[in-house]
Image 1 (cartoon, rainbow, N blue to C red):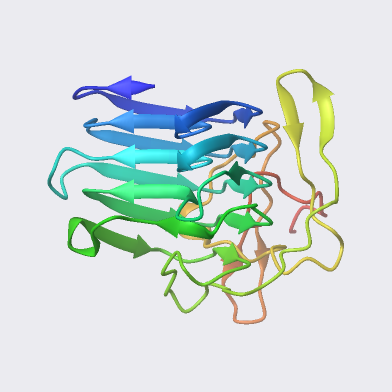
Image 2 (cartoon, rainbow, N blue to C red; image 1 turned 45 degrees about the horizontal axis):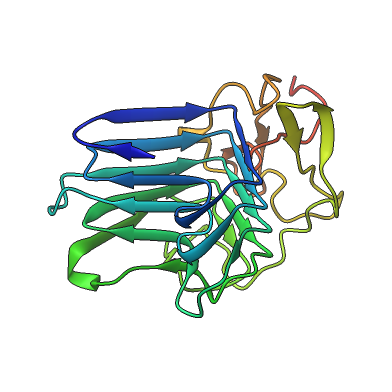
Length: 212
């Protein structure tokens, strides 16, 4: 739980099997900024709101929440009003994320729409449409085709890989792709059909040939 005017960067992390009333994975109240990058949030549980993340900003849009190349899946809330991400009084940015298969009423929720500014910079895939991901490269109501179970390399390194037919492969916005993925493996960009360079969406890069 984070409180006060702090800022936090969570990078290359597994946030899993935690529980709380609000914010099963991460709970924050009145902090300046929270950035979650190259991370997997799964199997967290809340009794009310924000099964994965609960972010309550400072009362203005000057509080910032950002997700970059995260995989957010299989989180649970006991409330019919709860979502996997609860966001209020903040500016929220989504880039290259996968949000899917959460046992929640919605993926993204907020109490007051006037208290929130959502900015999508593209490359996101969600199996629902309630996160308001509106970039022209976002895929809503889409199955990202994750592997059915976690790959576990160590107690602190578990992740979902992408199936060979996953739409997340080469779907990320390369302008914001981290150099390395959750496993600290390099993200290889490839030329897409549109001529753009793309990495994969989600926390883990599908291993592929290095572009020549």
